[in-house]
Amino acid sequence: MTITPELFNAAERTLHASGRKPKDAAAIITRLESDFQIKCSVEGGLLSMTQGADNTPVSVGTVLQSYTAKNPRDFFGSAGEINFKDDLQGDHAAKIRYINEHGGDAWARLPLNEASAKANGQTATNAVIPSIAMKASEYKRLTTAEKSKLISEIGRKGIEAIMARRG
Image (cartoon, rainbow, N blue to C red; front, side, top):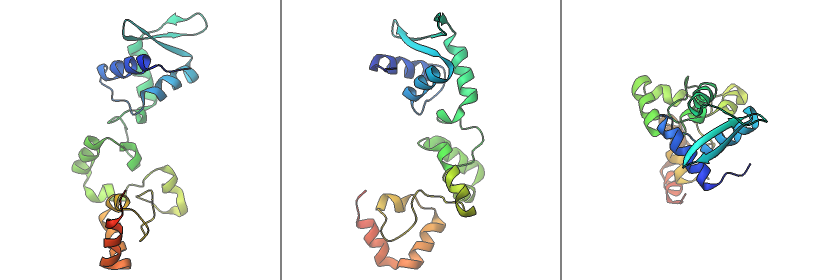
């Protein structure tokens, strides 16, 4: 399936109008077609959907409601139960809401993703291992506990070297 800019824009408009903020509208359209045999098209600038070999028209609202219920992590602010930091990736408002409701320590204890939660029984909270070789942007994503530990290991000069790196 080729997703034209017109189809992508119509999908984003429709998803936003339905109160959903998609992380990747193109991936949602592709998944609807591959997993549910729902073909998306544009009619009069609006998203239209058909299903099956006979192209039976389906309710866009019903399809999106069902899809959202089954795949909440495809939408910002709809992660449902938050088990990983990646559940809220890119959704700063939801991250702030989580920290306000549960506290900074609860956020720091969340593993980055499912893979990091299983890695040697430890919970990784960042995609990189804290070290003197990291970039400034990676250092800024560390938790307070990780920053403190790294500072005690490499000292002020090491942190200055990290912060001097771009990226």
